[in-house]
Image 1: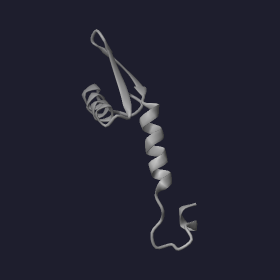
Image 2 (image 1 turned 90 degrees about the vertical axis):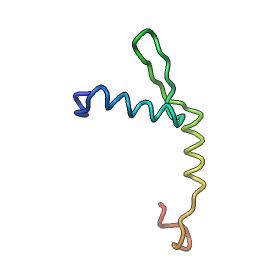
Image 3 (image 1 turned 45 degrees about the vertical axis):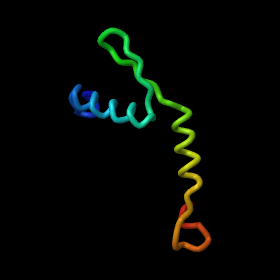
Image 4 (image 1 turned 30 degrees about the horizontal axis):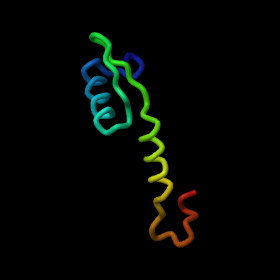
Length: 64
């Protein structure tokens, strides 16, 4: 947290958002939360982004 200069409540808020949208998994042990990436959701987002095409550039080279 010091590295990013954020407080614990701010980090908690942002992690809750990431968990809520499915990008991060949350496992609670006592008062601690353990987070991990949700690889399935990340791969779905990756495939979605790859499926997008540039509009107005003709041959798509502007995306490279």
